[in-house]
Image 1: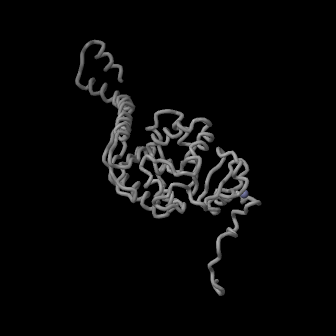
Image 2 (image 1 turned 180 degrees about the vertical axis):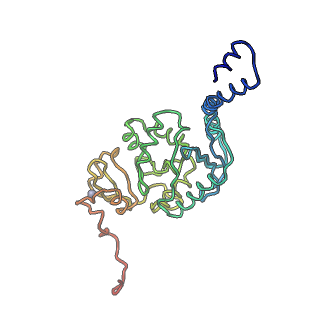
Length: 282
Ligand SMILES: [Zn+2]
């Protein structure tokens, strides 16, 4: 500010011009303050998918929320959490992309889920850690609650892991459908068992609509030895199950960088399965 204007202020002689100058000078810092007060925006909307209608929220740092509709009490809690951190705005284009990705993914496009995930709606650091670890379970594989607990540093925390799955704000993208019971039963799912089966089937598991357990064709991948085995290998009887990840088939296990067991040879066609090919077949 020019010195003569300051002198005017000192003298109590205000001119309109002086006030304008003060306002102009303060504008930048006021804007900075406003920016820090104003909450970030999140696009919110409903999209259609093969898993039914989904309520979706996407913020500047990624996908915040995917929720199977109709609404329930979990959704009410999530919306409260969303509104306390973000200003929901309508943005059809952004939420539509999520629906399109899920549709392609369910049709078998393995790389279709491209949205970055933002776990801002997760309340505890433990749940965040578990959900981060869960993202290491690849498409075509499943783990038990116990094994995920072991990975997340909570070896006796199967129940806590169950809660973390239940409170996952971004199902499908953070794959809580890839967590099953230790005995190979499919187990529960926030979106219902039917959706869990639908997702696992699209990821390569040979599961029927009413199947309760993983199919016999799965192979056992050992985290420590990086070796995978057939379901009926004699070594699986005494293995530490917290170190096991089940793969839909030998191809998925090899894709994840595991080597076939030399005892049960899961990479070879089972000798027990009959050969139906006719002479002369290619
Ligand atoms: Zn084996």
